[in-house]
Length: 131
Image (cartoon, rainbow, N blue to C red):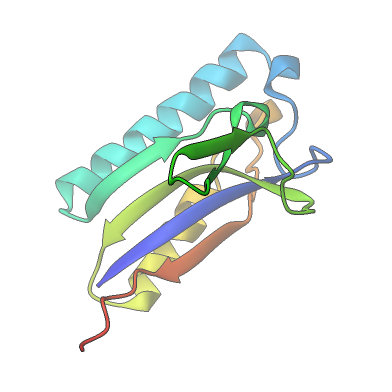
């Protein structure tokens, strides 16, 4: 079954301290962890896709206009204290395995090598209803 793991971070920077304040070695350690993590998911045949996302400041809201043409704005966005930082789509046998994978990603190292313990939402990918 496929699951989406949504990596979040707080707007207050409590879950993912501003990376601009990290040392170069701390950034390298974090990036190496994520690359190794994704490589293991590929080797185990569990990774479908994974991407980091750009800052929420670059996001746009799109609605269909009366003629179907896109109406694009830079908000308003839902009130939230958390932002989406990236995602993984994994294909695993059980929800328990998806939860294990999310916990492993959550432990990515941050400043001074300490685990960030970032919140990661795990959600099954639904299937199309039968009609």
